[in-house]
Every structure is written in structure tokens, then in C-alpha cells.
Image (cartoon, rainbow, N blue to C red):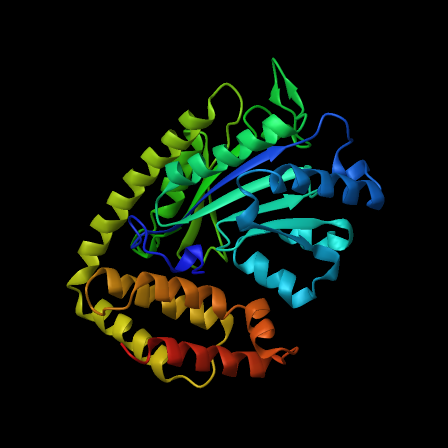
Length: 334
């Protein structure tokens, strides 16, 4: 089954992915940080049983994180399916994962249930509908901790209320080139949103997410984020048009494409800088490379995924060679 990140999504030129995360806890168990290993495993089995006996059962698999190799766990982090915190404390953790990796549910991480739904491109509302459907099953089959005044009870006060965090992964190289990200970040902060770099502040990939979880409905939070995302997409596209006819810029983009198609070694940071330019070049019509090809490549050449592919730990130079080889293979036909 095809994974979510190789599907074509709305506004894929700027928005790589959309994510909805819901935090939930059981009434009759302490938060995971205060649970024994045995209790964590018991709670995890209870939650999975609730889903296994529903119409969702056929598409969901329970993975024992303690049996997972380091590289396999890291590969899931690189796919944005689990957190690094979950990996570090995975000896008693479990993960529910759908076949296409659209749905991932971390069990007994910071909360008993961290339900996440991913979609390619800008598709927050569809991701929310899917998450809400799964949430309804959990609410019907489990006693979920809820307070009439505070809403859903969570281990972190910042999640109290809806327990919902919505986010989009943006590629905004033109706004970065113009030095407008600081102003944009300050603006969205005033609107109750957060904008943070995914890899480093030198790259053009950013997460835009909601911060407010109390005094607002889940649907309103998703709609608000979607509306701001629409505005950023428009700003980024306008900024790209200003770059399009600059000879020096065009040359830089073509050089990046040539390097990726020919290089024999690529470091992770070098790859990110170059693929960002190529992705921008695609949006401006310089090349015809599917966004889903680029998205899959960005995941596949990260350290954990490279190690899983190789079937063994690799030295840095070996990783750089394999990264370059995979990149040449993916882009060579274009």
C-alpha cells in the first residue's frame, strides 16, 4: 500500500504535509510518567483492544517498541510518525500504525494516547475528520479523562481543553530569502500560532501549528490554522514570482539540480539545501519532478532510513555515498 507522503496533495508546492494530533488519557490510570512498565503494557493492550474490536481493526497494527532496533525507531521519527522522546523511553512503549502510515498512535508516551493523522499537502480538515472518527471509537469504548470546565485532561497543561495540535509542514524558501520569516513568525504568534524550523533555521522548512487548546472548539482551531496557512501560501508564491526571472537565481537552482543528479557523496545538510532549491525550481516550472518523489526522497535519505535500507550501521562517509546514490537514482530520469 502506498504511503501517505507519496500522494499528491493540495498546495504541494508550499505545503508538504498536514498533521492532526489528539492527546487523550484514561480515567483509571496515572499519567505514563508515573506508571510501571507492567502497567504501561497493560494500558497499551487495553487501548489496542478497543480499536481492534471496531470497524478500524483491519488497517491497524500494534508494534512493540521494545523489540524495535534503534535505526527502525529513528526511521519512524524521520517520517514524523513518532517523537524522539518516545524512542528514548520505548522499552515499555507501543505504537499503533496504519498500513499506509497515515494513522499513528503512540501509547503511553507523554499521555496514554497520542493519536496522529497525516495527510499530504494542505489537507488539515480531512486529517481532522479521520482523527475525529478514531477519537469517537475511543470515547465510546474507553473511559477517557474529561472535566466539564477544563476539557480533556492531559499530562501537559498546554494541551488541556481540546488536546488538539494541528500543524502543517511548509516549504518557504522565497520568504526565507527575503528575510521575512522573523516578521511572519511574530505575526502568527499574536494569532495564537507557532512557527518553528523543522531542521535548522538555515533551511526553508517550517512547522506552523496552533498553540491554543482551551476556549476553542477542535474544528475552529483547525479552520483558523488553515486560513493562516492559505495566507502564507499566497505570500510565498508571490515572493517566488519575484525571484523567477533573476538570472543568478535561475543559475543557482539549475546548479543545485545538477549537483544532486551527479554527486557521489552528499551530507545531510548539503542535501537539504540543494533539494530545497530543486523543489523551488519545480514550483517555478524549471523542472518536472513530482513533489511526491521529492517528499519520499527527503525521508528516504535521512540517517535512520538509510541504516534500515542498508541493513547495517554505516559510517558517515558510507551514508553520504548511499544518500547520493539514492538521490541520483530518484532524480536521474528527470
